[in-house]
Amino acid sequence: MRRAGPRALGLAAALLLLCSGGALRAQERAPDSPVGLWETISDVDGKPKGHIRIREAEGELRGTVEAILDPAKRDKRCESCSDERRDQPVLGMTVVNGMHRDGDHYGGGRILDPDNGKVYSCKMTLVDGGKHLQVRGFIGFSLLGRTQTWNRLE
Image 1 (cartoon, one colour):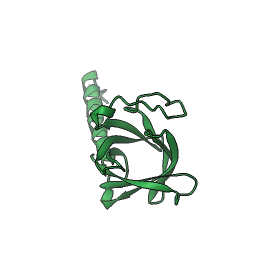
Image 2 (tube, rainbow, N blue to C red):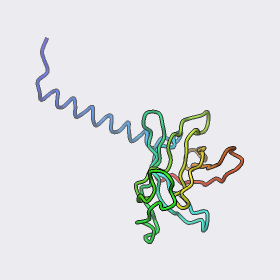
Image 3 (spheres, one colour):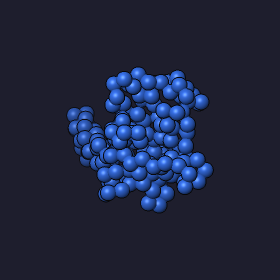
Image 4 (cartoon, rainbow, N blue to C red):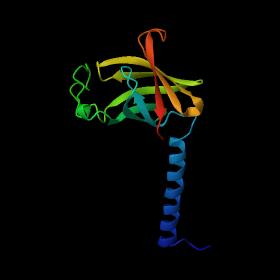
């Protein structure tokens, strides 16, 4: 039996990395998962407000602010936050955490509104074949809250 030389092992490792990277990109764009990049819409004027990147780690979904579209707000800090995020830059901040699949939606997590510093319970539901994500923030019961529709960018 012949042993593989260092060159063959290097080639095998490179192929493995290429294949796993393609699988990861496919997972990021799966229409049945909120993993990916989302455009948020302002409740005030209906215009695009920012981009949230949702990732899955250890079975939990987390969302991070990846872009703030209003140039005047790009350096904004979460002055109203009452936890460790107080006075931290909103850009790069984790605003969604603890989300888990619960049937046809995701729940059990929390969402931060960096405009007012409040943290809400959260429920997410994919609609339109995964092109949109309904994000509901609420206190106590899901009936007491508001829903935003985010648009999938990738």
